Image (cartoon, rainbow, N blue to C red; front, top):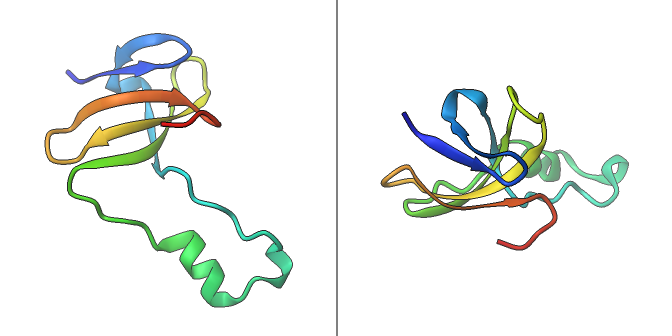
Amino acid sequence: MLLIACPYCGERPELEFAHGGQAHIARPAKPSDASAEEWTQFLYMRDNVKGVYAERWRHAHGCGKFFNALRDTTTDHFVKTYKVGERP
């Protein structure tokens, strides 16, 4: 079983976590003024990286908090986990 290190609770089994997609995606500054293309980019377009990738995760069956993780998509190895707002 894969173990993921929650920055708040420590190492826990992967079944306790929910994947939240790519990390560090900025919402449009003025949502009411954003075009359909800007919303499409924000909501649907994500990088598809082979290698280390920054992702959002939530410790759904634990503390319930979101955090970010650097994960190697080729090996599924978590390189580092860190709190939202911290730099990777």
